[in-house]
Structure formats: C-alpha cells, structure tokens
Image (cartoon, rainbow, N blue to C red; front, side, top):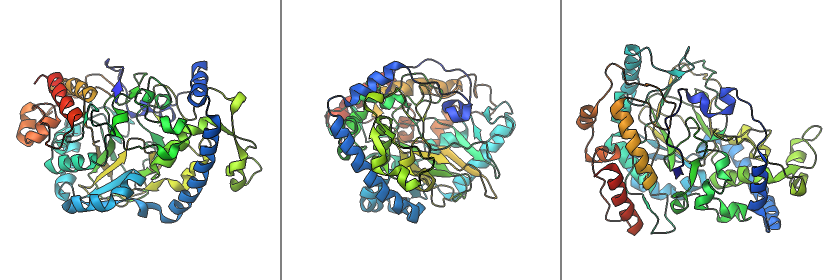
Length: 476
C-alpha cells in the first residue's frame, strides 16, 4: 500500500488520529463523495441491494454466536508449536482476522521491557505522551526495549510465518511475503482506573480512502463488495494491496507502510476489562458491512421500534435518489470510526470481544481491516502494557518508508508516519546503531534496513523483483 504524502508532520499525539479522541467536528463530506458513491454502484444497484440482504442475514447469524462465545472464538497458538498450530487454525484465523501467539518472547524478558521503558522516561521527563498529565500512550519509538523486541529472532519468525497466511493472486505482484520489515510504532503503559484512552471501535489505514478510486480503489481491494459480490471479496489477497493508497490527507498517525497485520507484544498480565484490546472477529462480513452501509438507510428510525424491528432487513432500503455524501464514521485525515448508531447491524455491544488473557511475551495480531477498540475503563489492579509491533512485507513503498524511518532512527526523531518534532533526539541513553548491531542478527538488521535483503527460495518472480528494487531504494 502506498502513501501520496511523505512530508514531516506537525507535533501531536495519538488523539490526533481520531475525531472522537481529538474533539474535532465531523462536517458533511463534500459533493465529490456523493458522485463517488454513485459511481461505485452505477449499473448494478440491484446486485448491491441483493448482496446487502444476504449480508444482514449472515451477520445476524454470526453475531448471535459471538454473543454466546465471546473471547473463545479467538484463535490461540503456541510459539513452541507454531507450524502445526498455524496449519490447524489457518481457516479460523482467516475467518476471525485475529490471533494470539503465546510465548513468543520469554516472559521475564518481556516484563523487563516495561521497567526499562519506565527508567528511560524517568531519565527523560520531556517525553511526550497522551494524556500529558497522566501518560498512558507514549510518543516513544526508539527506546532500547522497542529496538530489542523488533529485532527479536522469535518475533521475526512469528511475523514471517503469519505473513504467509496471505497469498498473492498474481505471482508477478511486486510484494514479498518471505521477510518482515520493522515498523516503528508507539507503546502503551495503561494504569488501573484510566478512562482517558477510551478509543472506541475503529479501523486504521485511513477512512474515506476505502471508497476512493485513488485510494484502495487503485488496487481494486474492495471491488467485489461494491459490485454486489461480497462473498467473493478476499481480505487475504496481497496482490490487491500493492497499489492501494491509505493516506490521501497526510493524517497524523496515518500509516504509509502496508501493515498486513497490526499487532502488539504484551509486557503485562492482562485479561478482559483490564485496559486491553477488543476486536470484531468477523473480518469479511464486518468489512463488507461498513463499506456498504453508506448506500442504505432505515425506513423507520429506531425510536419507538424494538431492536429486532429496527434491524430487520425490510426496514432498510437502498438510498437511491436520496443518497448523500455521507460515509458513516469516515473523515478525511482520520481513522475510520464505528458505533452502534451509525453501524447498528454490527451489534458492536456484543460483537466486540476481548482478547483472551495474555502474559508478557504473548504476541497479538489482527488483520489491517479488523475493527478494534480498547477498554473504555481499565478496571484491573495493575498496568496493561504493550509494544505496538505490526507485520509489514517487502514492497517498493514499504522500502521507501524504511529509508525515512532509518534516518529517523539515526536522528532520534519520531517515526515518519507519526506526529513530528524533536522526539527522542535529545534523550539520554537513546540506542544508536551500535546498540542495534549488538542486539540483532542478520535477519534483524535486514528488518531495520541496515543489511541487504535476501530473496527466499520460495519467492516468485514478483517477490524477487521487488526485493531487488527494495535493495536499490535502501542503497544496497
């Protein structure tokens, strides 16, 4: 996936990525979005309407299962048995779009990351965070635990194995799934009782870009959904993502690297309601729903209706001549947000399920289209702490990002996708290249862009070609 923007961003924090956290307004979208919506379904409106009916029926069925099963539906794998578990749970991971890999980093090692970070912050009181007066999410990208974790051979192995759940429908596609590129993201140390980091259901990777023809449309990522054939939409086809643009508006925190999975490495013992992650584990269905929702409206509003009556398929009709520019929950330059009022058939109150209990060293991943949220209130007794670490393949655009990220690491400035400023450039004990070299093997150095990438024997022609191109971009 590509970004049309690469300029340095203004200073800020994680709240700038979402309208609901930043307190911003959502003005109506301009006329061009109405024109766009009409063009997406023109000539096959009947197919889209029929597909919506099928979608609502399937959602109702699957939501009833989630209401009963909750976190039990989340696939759980053991790092010590990763190959077998991946084979056994592959179809379930593809359906759910989320997984927990247990014991990727030894427990004590992962827990020590947190105390090392706290010491780094203590030494550097200028560290930016959200909220600044009671930090829960730190604007840190280059602390020693983040460097060690991103370069950890176990984590790199897990990332590469998970990447291969994806497939390329076109072997010529310029993407390699055989090695992971490290992406520098933030970290969370959320304290008991916190209610400030109450990030509701959302999807990263832009918002309006999912409908835009010069956004995800450049790769035809969601064409099947807009054609009225959501069942044929393959969220795991890497070929469609190569040319997709996720950030047309230079949003703060908008990602210009293609992250196949978002993820975090736990540094704490955390269970549901203890400041942890919630996901909607119905990848294909939920994605199709939030994409088609702007084309439909209720005949009768929810007031004076039972929930069942309001959600009934015969209460929802194609907007037709009354279509507006609205894309529910999408604002240019911000992440896609979802809620019960705007997306009622997702039944988010019961379909957003907690991550199962995790220990330090467990690695949690979710597909880049997955709806996710965090607990509104941390009701636990101890911190809920994670290092955000996604999974990124080799593409030309990802390599271009790596050049900027490598410079940011050397300078100690924020990771290029994130709010700018001097970052950690003046921080005491900030790791340098020699620290990375002391803690990373060749695979780790390749992931950071400090060693030449190597094509795998299994790579097809597209993967080999893009590896060569990436090396050129990285200066090798």
